[in-house]
Image (cartoon, rainbow, N blue to C red):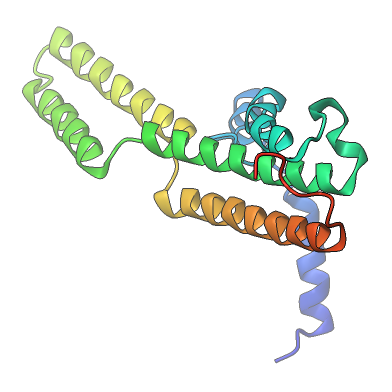
Length: 183
């Protein structure tokens, strides 16, 4: 069913009103929406060089000039994918398990139930425990992600590595002199 001209005009009017957060706190919070684990960024240069060094040695490619040749670029793509795979596994290893998260939530729930709030001191302590619980949840949201999301990054890195290896094999088929030195 097509939208009518009135509906389209109403949608455009409403869209002008949604401008995002206004307060500095809201802007700061929304600024971290996509920054949970840093896997959207390319891997650090030092990590890529760590993975590039053995490939460059095997094929006789200078690591500082790898980007200048087709073979070097293919090896660089493989090393970048390897570095990304390493980063995903590191983030996965640091993420808490569901059992740990459940245990932490039960612990905080027990703490909160200990204080009935009948007097000022218990109410203040209960509010402090509640605030600490909220801070812990916020920390978890900022630093950990859904395992399915991490698997998506791992799959992307593995596919990038597979494509880079295909590219390298095509280059090696064209140039018979570009065989591994160690072979």
